[in-house]
Image 1: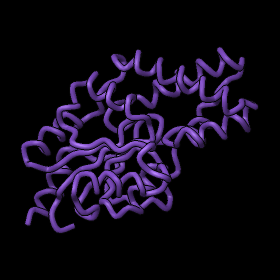
Image 2: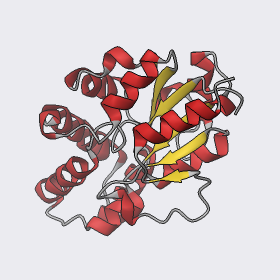
Image 3: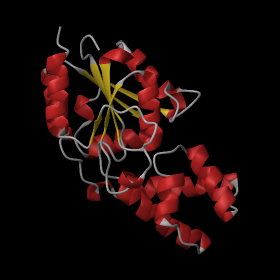
Image 4: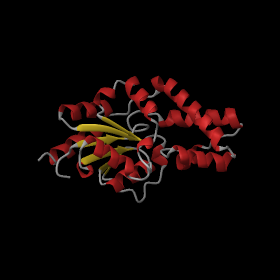
Length: 223
């Protein structure tokens, strides 16, 4: 890294603590629609941090749910999550870090496997939309996380070199993509993703004081 030009944030579980709400909502719906229980560790290893197609394959294999049924299932999940955003807390250090980055003239993006409307609604709900310059979603790239494409796309839209960026992620799929992309990876796990296997993930920092870490990286790479 020559100079810190931008920070690329994941959304769910990184900016807003929605991972717990996602599990509770999917578990609730799995019981309602299928009369089945969604095991927490199954969710962590097969669904959390992945993309819609991966979740769809899991539900097809585990519960015999068709693609059409899963599409309706996913729409209901999104509807309930958005309605429940007021119960999702902003994760520690996020507002302070975003404020510091804005004051320092460092660009910010969100790169997420979720849909654009979901991310925009969440950012507005928490008053964080004013900080974000670019939103990159799974619909913008051929290959979603764990591929690096979405990070490279976000950097391109920001007009920066990916090697001069920080990526902040909470889950294995996102962390894998961020590490491969060439960004400096800060891995911030939460109560759901802390159980994931991060072996082989090219992270530099893990579960740190976010603001101080970003400040230190910016200071070391300010020329």
